[in-house]
Length: 272
Image (tube, rainbow, N blue to C red; front, side):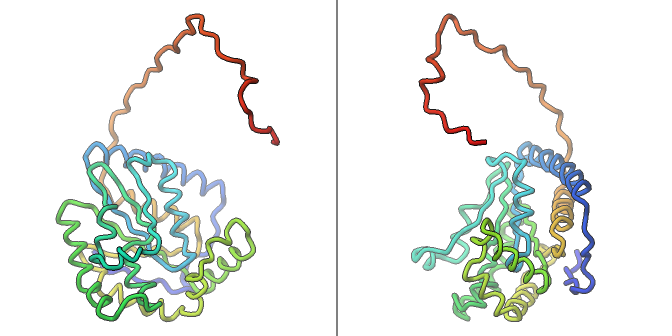
């Protein structure tokens, strides 16, 4: 597997994709995701998918499109918050290990242990020694996961500074998205080059043959979603399983049971 390469902003595909085309292709991919899910369950696979990238790069959007049609008992999304004081004293990877999948499960990490190489490094939330230890131990940790039989796939969502700024402005002006502008997001605008340097250094250590980074050009959200889901489906060999024939049983008869009147219940106002 070759190394992932960054795509220069001027070479990014900014062509719009029509909603009709997008929805049709997304629907097809989501059907395939359900088939993949059944294969994972049938074969007892353990799948870990990591989504990383700059703030407002579109990670959450693709995670939503992957998970929304799947069984949450099989496909879980993990998005951890700030570590507690106790967690800060643990072995760094210990915090993430309990969320790794068991047989027949797929876990989608909305950010992951790579926080140490990104925000913690840039914002000074870890020491130089902790950072260096992470860079040494992370490839070994991931090789251990792979040797144990786990399937590990890592995506980096790449967005240009111009497009990130557009998305920040859109969030600022949309009350339903303003919550996405955390203090860390705002600081990331000031430290654009620091984050670029941290990402490049992280790739130098962790973009390995056994566990490569797959870069998703994400200036166009819809194309990024379709391309990422398509790549995920092509990364895990799966087969169609025979559809189980489901026969609805007859509805139970009342046997003279009389239910209380509907009007006795507290009904919400029908405003719409």
